[in-house]
Image (cartoon, rainbow, N blue to C red; front, side, top):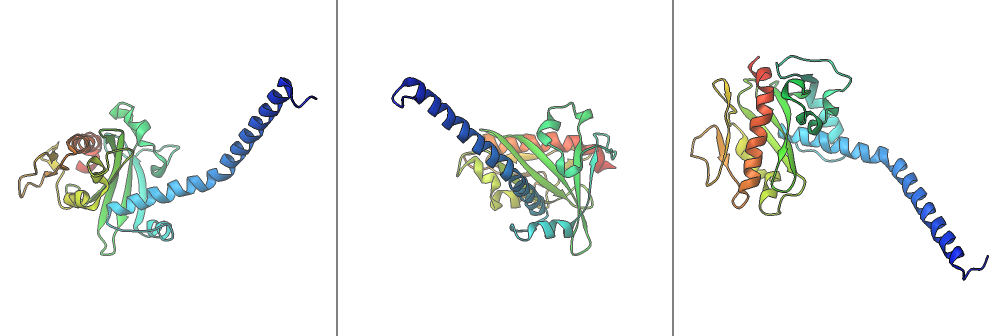
Length: 230
């Protein structure tokens, strides 16, 4: 074949594209187990952070096995339900798209070194530029927050992205989420009133992301309300 012809160029380019596509597809298949493992470890690390346990890639799996003693799924009536999924694999993005009465709500139960039990729930919502999510650990009284962990997909560094930093998250320790029979919590622009057990300070310059955290807590805790009351 004439290497200077258009046909040769077309065939060569097509073959090269097919070869590269095949190699990329093969790499994706081979790397997927490692990617899935990294996602699993990152999620377990986030759950541990909600009960104030720091871990790294080498310790996360063992610490998770030590402290997370039970996992289960409940419905909006607070009843445990059986499912072909386990709590760890529930996709909260999918669940939030359903009516609240049809949602699968994961619960992670932790037992601390002092023997106390914490109940961890997953939360997900919308920030200014994209999804935000996290885990909230509740004390045995099921009213008081033990710890909180938040993260985001694309909030602005130095502003909304501060929800993923310790100074914002540490405010939640000791706060309460239920006022009587209602879910009541505020992320207060301009700062929470000193001593207010149902509010934390919003992020300066990150009002919309802060309000996204507030809306996320209200929606998700309303879904879990019956579970905590039981």
